[in-house]
Each structure stands twice: as structure tokens, then as C-alpha cells.
Length: 196
Image (tube, rainbow, N blue to C red):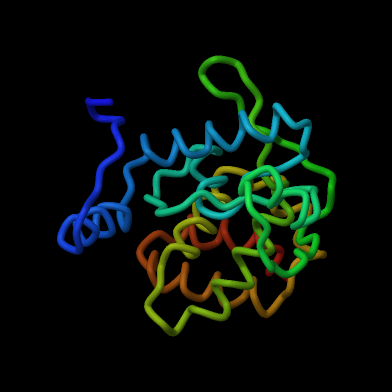
């Protein structure tokens, strides 16, 4: 077999090239991976949802992500049987999200794509931002900013169920970064339910 899809034997130099290329996949390559997973799980009637940066991207976010995260409603043994032909000693997975998936974005083809619901997506991002805020990692901050400004009514309605310390920490960073935009900072304070 010849051509771009042909298998190849490679040495350590070629491995290094492939490894480095895999560290910054393009949105097109991530989309192909997500499409494969969507087709695989759909074919086997397995409930799943995209989450993390990829789910934010599917909602319209522009931050570049480097992977496709998802949650699958299946045991690790069942998932392993579908993904890997040989046995493995993998640990059992835990359910991380509620089975209620809503707000699924539409693809340009009109096909629904399951993503984690806005409550779990925002609360998880808040928690991770809170834990990483002093490490200079900004991905979660950018995702939170996008989600809060894109879904302000939903976030405001959920604020009683979101950790107040996490909301305040995010708002403080937001206020600092947008110090000259008073109305925007005030609006974010309202969205997060931090006004008295």
C-alpha cells in the first residue's frame, strides 16, 4: 500500500517528528478524531459527551485545545473491548458527569453533537481555574470568560450551585485583566452572582 495513509516503519528520528507534530494538533485533526469517536460510539449505541476545551470549542469558543476530552456511559471493560482488541489490566472508570446532557451544539450539517451540560462544564472549569490560577495557566480562564459572556443567563441561574470562592477568584482575575472596562467587569460580577 502506498500513499499518505500507508503504514510506515520509522526510526527514533521519525518517531520524534511524529511525536512533536502530535503535541499541537490542528483543529481539523481534532475534528477528525472527534468524528471517529462520535461514529464509533454511535455505531455501538453508547451514550457519551464531549467536555473540556473541545466542548467549549464546539460551543463556539476560539481557544486552541490540544485534545478531545469526553465522558462515556460505559464500564472501562466494555469500552476497552470496543477500542482495543486484546485484554488489558485497566482500572474501572468512575462516572464524572450526570447523565443529563443538554444544550448540544449543532454542526453545520445539522447533526447534534453531545457536549457536557453548561453547569458541569462551567463548575469544572471554575474548580480547575481556582486550583491553577497562580501557575500562569490561562486556558481555563479563557474558557470561563467565553462561557460566562456567551451564556450569561444560564450562568447567573446556576450561580447558587457554584462554589463562591471559585467564582470570586475568577472574577478577581477578570476584573484585573479588564480594569479599564468598568461595565464589562460589573456585568461579570452580576453574571457570577457576586453582587449583594
